[in-house]
Image (tube, rainbow, N blue to C red; front, side):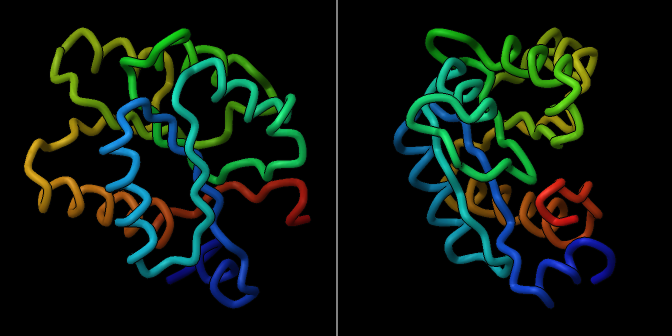
Length: 157
């Protein structure tokens, strides 16, 4: 453990996670997997791309919500799909440093290429099997919240 993760654990800082997922079952499984994880976290869930952008811009009911340390983003969302959210976040100077993990059912090569062209930080296809899905979420936690050094937010100093 080094860098920001060590700082998170020593200072008791909670890792802020934004899950953008329209499937209630997948959202529930992700929340449960993170709740059972090793890293203290606060996972906020929104169900479409419009809500995701309102959350990230602290608008309406999301005013005062903390900026996420990482975003888990589904691609196939109602109202505004994940590709549009990804493009908006990465084009916004205030948001672009937030790592975005694409977590989707799509195995389409064009989706993989397009999201990396839009500067996604990684692309993960959701497994169908329950144990595999939980393992993927725990692997995301282990890598992104334990191993990787994330940029410090302005609130952290």
